[in-house]
Length: 508
View: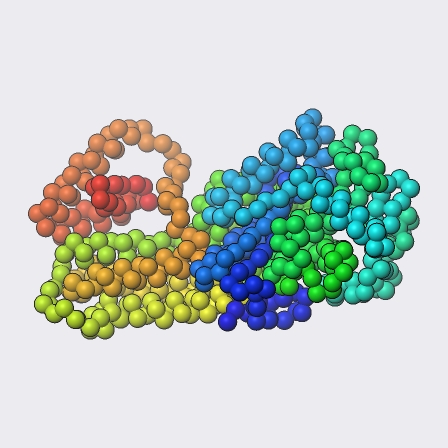
């Protein structure tokens, strides 16, 4: 039973999909006027995990994420750079994909762009005008009338009367109400435009996501998500215009999920914060962070805090996440080593029994603990996608694996033949957790050396000799010497991995 916190009801609700075994998701994407920052990354990593989780449970997932490629910021950047708005948008979309790929964010099923959905946007605006929910000004601007629909403010918990009282003096006097918002903007000199029934222009921000989500997911879909900064006015306005156009107050998204802010030195790192491009207090763009830390470490950092909670970003916390990731990765390699050694017949005690009970062996106890922790892992994910708690269960399993591995290496465990299959089951459980979280999908990167070796050919030649001596020891079943060589190399910062093609090495 999956429970989700619905921003609309402000409570956890049991998730009931609109269609059996199907989940439909719309997540507000980026406005590609520059490189994505760490605040952009959080919702996409969050929804990537949610999507993975539903798929693991057997659901068919339809996931849509848009690009707002027509926007004031994009036009401004294009004018400053002396290029077209499309050049700016496409360049930063490419950077976005590169950054998200590094964070193991799997591609959405659809990436609609505003520039490619203009006919649908214009048609929706016309519907709102025809139904009396929007009005056209003499210059061709079109505004949505918030007073025409009941319940405006139900997502954010705001009241029109309070918003009217708090309206600023500089509010556009052409509006019938200070909170009326633009559906269509008449073209200004030097700006891109499209033809419409109201003249040349381009759409307002809010109408875009309504048109794109309805086009790709239909009048009702399961989830709509994004950062908490989008609750008002963006998502509030999406609901108002979409339900007005459809004539159904129960249409549009059924569950609203919003992730908390990322802060750096108490500064909000949200999608709409102009300061998040650069800051003297730290780095914000995903590219900058990935230049110093592996993508999977950054991903783990984002998932170690529940998605609804605020997340303080600092380099110290990234370093902590890197150390934590290293411990998780170590357990993965330990499982791999254990399975390979036991199946190779190393240190095996053959009981001669075909139905040897797994509970008799230490491996049997390990797999039972793994099954328990897997159940806890799923329970955490079913409770509003609590990745923070799920990760603790995975880490607990990592510690159990480490204990078994150390006892094995010290000769305290004499495994039986069946233990190899049991360890493989533990590894499957561990990787099942990892797959949902989206880690261990990239090679563990070699740390960048501050100074390059002055004699790389000599290092390679020496390592070739050392690995050859270790292989001779393994062939002679002199496991003490073989393990000693591996352990001494590890202490020196060299990791040796045994593969079907032979031993390979890399700097730790």
